[in-house]
Length: 107
Image (tube, rainbow, N blue to C red; front, side, top):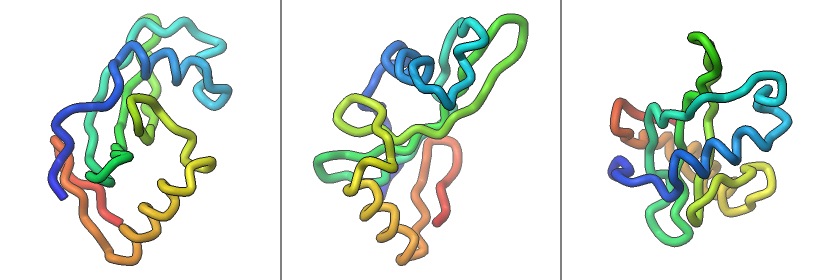
């Protein structure tokens, strides 16, 4: 597998998704932006699955980092996506290493 070169969702869409999740903690603080730190292609065939690390920035210098699974142009809830679970199990069984733009994801 090669590193993903393009994300299936924009930074604005990812920001909206993260802010809308109760686990994000963004309910207490006003986010000022989101940056994709790195991402890797978990599944190349459709539906494509991408693992992304994103940084959600708040006011003066504070931030959180989240891992998101992206598919079909949007973030997906990995616990509710059987395809993601099967893909993840296959990668773990194989002891796969997935290249990313900045490093690798090791299973």
